[in-house]
Every structure is written in structure tokens, then in C-alpha cells.
Length: 530
Image 1 (cartoon, helix red, strand yellow):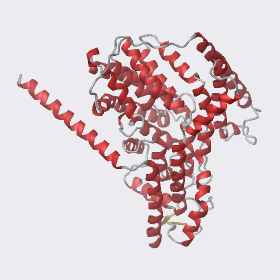
Image 2 (spheres, rainbow, N blue to C red):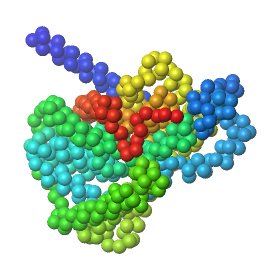
Image 3 (cartoon, rainbow, N blue to C red):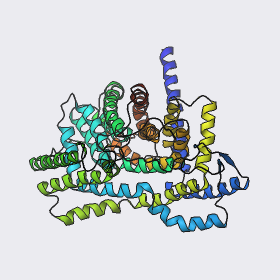
């Protein structure tokens, strides 16, 4: 009896410590202003800091070899002040072009137009339901996690459709509905950066990475496809890991489900399988997608393909890769419209235009965020602060002996910790990339690999951060099945996914990149050579 009381007290103490930790994370996160305000403050801070450091003539030795593009004539990189007449003139004249020239803006908008057609026609929802509800009982868990990962091409769909659907499927199978919710949440949010297809997040991150790389190398190019190979293999690792965590850790811990725990009378939960008309429409959409892929292959696979590099004849640096966002648009828009025609959800061009307009109208907050983020990135570049910090940081890493692949473990952990308080992937990368991309480039790693490592860190803590934009929605769905369910309970349920994803995904990163020497994407380098 004494041993039992001791263990119970220890467990209670641990739970209390964990809840205090979660409360602290939430409190710290709530102290942060809105990301838009945060970027405005950062931009202002850059102006003030540049004035201070410029007054004291802070500078570092230019690490770029002589004769390279952008190298300072005297071999020194100095902090340039914006807190003077010349700086004010540059800010005023560059404010608009900073915004319109921000690399991720146009690419994300174009990609979203295509995804909008596929989403509003119902194609993505039908494909998701067909995938999950057609799975055998034995494969249902891994299929749900896999479907969550794939749904990231239109992330809102995964949160709104798949997560409630997964809870209903588990409940109908006599399994704990919260285990189904957790599995879907792990796929949609924990596996955020993994996917079989390129989505809207790829051009968004690559544009920020390219802007950060330009602080050190103005000619460096980072396309949306540079992490594709690694993201494809990550899809299967994350899906398998998520299914194992659900069945071996989360579901046993939850135990048998008691319907009396539900906040409402659930009754008999019914799920609508795709109708015969929807499946027929999905079939024709799939055929149109296959036809598009075949046509694109004819422009790239043959040695004389018209979308290969006009001078070298290779795929690397070709118009195909440079215009990959156009093909994302086409391969979503055309199958989406074909589906809509056969399903009866889209009849003419006006329906397509309405779908695109609705999608763009929902991006108001993103466009506002981009305006201020673009100013922050531009100011960082103009003042040379990013380069100076990168040189100082690289020197520190080398002094500590952290200039090998092991530095990525710390980098991934750091990104995961920042994500606990700054939940937006684009906002976080826009803040950290101008410092860490050139810093890690200086110790020899390519921007493509740095971005891949960032995507791991950003994804693994998505399921445990209260700052994630859909966290409240997930909590509301979970509360239907267990009354009085709090945020701490939900985070504690998702924590095993975060931990296992960190270990499995980081191990995959090291094996794929450094042990096997495989590129993270088409034409992507592992090491950077000035």
C-alpha cells in the first residue's frame, strides 16, 4: 500500500510539473504580439540596431573569395545604418518593391489558385474519404496518418475534414475515438512538411531560403522542388512512426472507450462514403492527372526535351524546375475541374473563377503578414546584419567544434522550441532563415539541406504547441468525446508523437543525407562551396 501511495504521489507530482510547463509555454506564447505586429517591431528594431552598430563601425572580414559576386572591395563587411537620411530615403523608395518582389508571394498565390479548384470542386475531400474509409481494419491507423500527411497540399482540409472523420471511424470500429483523432492530427500537423506531391508550403519556404542565401551568395537559387526527394521518403517514415505510436502508446494509454465520457450523446455515428458519381468523377480526375504527368514527362525525360536546360541539356537548372509552381497549378486545377464537371460541382469557367477568388480572399492575413515580413528581410539584407551575425555565429560554432553534421541536431531542436511560441511556419522561417542559412552555409552546408532540417524541427512540435492556429478546433472536436478535456490532456496525448517523430525523422535525415549521400531534392547540393 505504501509503494502504491508513493508511486501515485510521484505520478501526480510529474503530472503537476508537466502541466506547469505547458502553462508556462502557453503564457509565454500569449505574451507574444500578433505575427504581423512582431514583424513590424522586428523591422523597426533592425533600423535602430543598424544605427547603433553603424555608429560604432561594427564589421567582420568578408568570408567570400576574392572576385566573387558581392564581395566587399576592402574585404570587410560593415553594418550599414538605416538611421540616417540615406537610410530613410532607401526605406521610403523600397517599401513597395520589397513587398512586390518578395520571392514567396507570387509563387504561393499561383500555387493556391490551382489547389483552390481541386479543393472547392470537392476532389480533395472525396479522395481523402475514399482513401481512409476504403482501408481495411488492420491498415486503418497507418492509412489515417498517411492521409493526414498527404492532405497538407491543402492543410485546412485535413484539419476540418480528416480529423473529425478519423475520430468517427475509430468510434465506429469500437476503438477509442481520441486515438483516431490523435493519429489524424499527427499526420496533418506533425507530418506537415512531408508529402508525395509539392504543395503551397514548398514555394513559400524556398523563397525565404533563397532570400536568406542571397545575404552570402547573391546568385544562389533555391527552387520549390529542392526538398522533394527527402519529403517523399519522410512521408512513409512519419506514417509508419505515427501508426506505431497510436497503436503501441496512445491507444493503450487511453484504454477502452466509455460512451459515458462523451460531452454529448454521440448516438450511432455514420460516415458518408463517396457516392458512385463522386468515385466516377475521381476516376476521370485521376486519368486527367496521369495524362498531364505523361505530357510533362515528354518535355523532360527525353534528352532533347523542350523543358530541359537549353545549354547543358540537363534537368538541373532547367525551365521545368524553375517553373515548377506553374505545374503545381496545372496538375491541381485541371484534374479539379474535371472532377467538378463529372461530379456536378463545377459546370463552367465561372465556377472555376469563383473557387480561385474564394481562395485568394482567404489569404488576406497572409498577404498582410508578407508585407511586413518583406520589410524585415529587406532591412536585414540592406544593413548587412544577417551576414555579420552569420560570420560571428559560424566562428562560434567552429570554436565549439560544432561545424559537422551534428550541428543539425541542435538546429532541429532550436526550431522545434521556437515553434512552441511562434506557430506559423512562414513567420518562424522568415525570422530565423536570414541568420541561420548564411551561418550554416559558412561552415559548409547548402541551403537546401538547411531548409530540410528546419522543416523537421518546425513539424515535430506542431502537435504540442498551443500557438498552432487550429489547436482550438482540435480541442473542440476532442471535447465531444471526453467531457472536461483540457489543453494539457490533449498536449500530453500528442507528446509521444512529437518525441518519436524527432528521433525517427532526425535519424532519417542523417542516414539519407550524410550516410547514404543522397540529395534532398532534384539538383540539390548537400555542401556549399563559395
